[in-house]
Length: 255
Image (cartoon, rainbow, N blue to C red):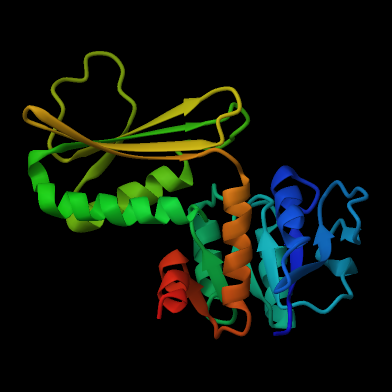
């Protein structure tokens, strides 16, 4: 099998380092070069922008930030590459741009690349279908003190999946303070905790009369996200234009 050739955006960051570490022993994929605003020696060519890249590739893995998104999407379109968008914090305009480019290139986008989180998403949706409106739903997410966006993309992904069961009628309430009155039935509370070096923890609580059901996931290392990104890159190689997510990857792997 020919290796999947990857351009790694955000190559010199922590997530880039995790991806490169996993690729060292992966016979099916390799990084051909990197892109980073602050290049340093990491054992391969790293460019400040995509304009310097000459190496042929199949897929871009993007672990940078929404800044410069248009350049990455345009490079992928010009060179016929797929792109794995592994960062979060995209604006409404960013999401519209991604949707437009997905008409021309294969885009893999998910708020969380962990297999466990995607299983949690399915479990939460199933719980909401069974429990219905008789249970109040609260989401608590915890991350390290350097995370810039809140709530996390994963927390919103979980809330959106649950809200599909209720035909989008639930509204999201971010934290509570002061005399806010009794909790209303149409709420999904979403609470962000920031501190220390917490990699990522998500908890969804279904609180009913005299009983509480809690579904949780904890990531103990960022390597789980790097491994998911590599799996996504292999999956995306050669795919037709469109928007893909983890459920598409899992469906193909388990077909």
